[in-house]
Structures are given as C-alpha cells and as structure tokens.
Image (tube, rainbow, N blue to C red; front, side):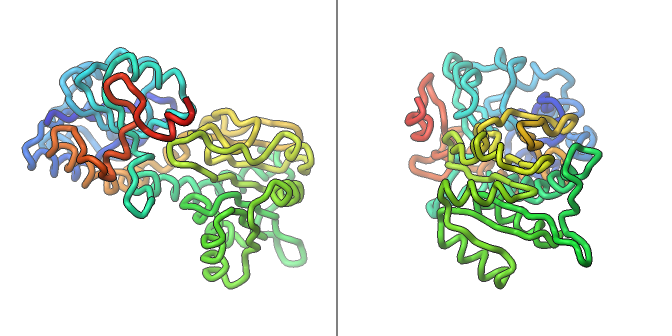
Length: 357
C-alpha cells in the first residue's frame, strides 16, 4: 500500500503521526511510505531518520497526498488540505467531526474514507487511540491550570499546593475517564485539594481506592457541579462521548458564581467543549476571559510535548495501521478499526454522527 505522512499544518502542531521505527516496520512489510520534508522535526526526528527507515522524502505536500492510498495524520485536515481529498483516498487521523461541520461536508463531497483515531473502539468499549493523547492532555491540564492561576496570567494568585499555614487550591475535575484520571493524579502530586465528579460510580470507586480518601468523589448532577464549580480555583472538564458532541456541563450561569481569576481548562474542546463559552485557543494565546474566569481550550494540548506525544501516538496506532495496510485500507467488519470509520462513499456511517445529524 502507498502510505503518506504529511507535515502537520495546523497552527502550533508539532507532532508527527509516525516515528521512524513505525515507518521501518511499514516499509519492511512491503508498503511504500512517503514522508513530507520536515514532518518530524518538531518531535526531534530528521528527514535522514525516515530515509534510513526506507521512506521516500518529498518536499511538497501535494506529492504525499496525491501519491498515497492512505494518509496518516495527527490532527484533522484544515481548509488548505481539502483540495487533496479524493474518492480513492483513506484518511486516518484525529477528526472530531461532531464539532466540525465544514470538514464533515468537505469529506462527504470528496467521497473519500475518513477514519478517526478517536472512535476506534475495542470490544470492552475502550478507545486505544484516544487514550494516550487524553492521558497527556490530562496531565498537561494541571500544568496549564496552575500557570493560569498565577497573577501574571490574570489568575487569582493561588499556589495550587498551598504552603504551611495556607490552604491549598481547590481543584474540581469533571469526568473520571483517561484524561480526568491523569488530571487527578497530577493534582494530587501538586498537593491540591481535589474533587472529582463523574456519573460512573465504578470509576469513582477506583479513584477512592487509589488515593485512600485524599480525593472527594461526587456523583454527577447539575446541582453538584454548580456547587463545586462555584467554590473551585481550578476546574478541569474532561467529559466525552465517543464520536459525539461533548456535553455542556459548566454553564455561563455557573461560571458567573466563580471567584475572580479562577480558571477552567476545557480538555473536551476537540468535541465542542464541556463549558458553555468554549472556543478554541492556542498554545500562543492559551486562555480568554469569560465573566470572572480564565478559560483555556487548547485543541491540540499534547503538541506542547511533541516528543512524548509522537512516541505515544505512533506506538498506539502501529498495529492498526499495519492491519489496515494488509487489508488495502478496508477494515474487517465489526472490528475495532471498523468503528473508526466515520465517513465512507459520501455518507456518514458512524452512529454518533448519524445521531447528531
């Protein structure tokens, strides 16, 4: 199969979809891999590393897109890439189509097959390609949040871990999945005062056991979320439904009750966000002000650590890309990969997107 790895063009995106090690595995399996020049530099991989792995290096994005049957990307294509879409092309990437009508329409018009990393789902309902980036985003959310709480960034001047004789910062994590669990772990490490909210009591039980009572666990309800948000210094929202628009759990009315300079880090922004005023921010301008709060909605948060994130992503997608290549881009019916197909033949096929439409 002809496999293309283009340089990411989304602003501040420094990851690459495959390490030289994965490229070597693909070429040794008989596939032709084209890598765009400088694709890996943000993550610390040189063109020479990919060439040594058997890849063809090309300077033009068009050469990669037009001469590939399968494109492997990190982030969803942006408008400048839509003209590369065609009927006999498969794109395998994070797509987050529930929050991106423009990209959805472009994919539908082209007739290409669009497979989303975030909806590849194992029989136990786990999301093996979303999890590594969610974990990184969860850990980074605390670093970002703690930074935004400082006075130079417009925060209320709270040290998350407190100090002798001074109360630590109050952290509320909404959603105890992969991202939320990692956010809790880092918040505990920073010695914050942590509350986690989720509707899944089993997840809350696991957190109770892990931290031996150091975390307050609350069953999710609108009233509980409102009460906890009002008293929080830092809120991290990480509630997702695979493939669907993220639920809005923190309303403008709730935000209005927060202290001046408090912070919300909305990890769910790729799927539209869990906070009502959510809009995408960047690593250069990470937050905006809404009422009394500073809100951060960086849609490619793991790009802040591209070396770690690229290794994590490449390791996770490797078996799925190999399987897809062996099957000429057609996943086995009812497989984890089949669950990744969002659009095919000019039609929406993923159930979550069908419900949205």
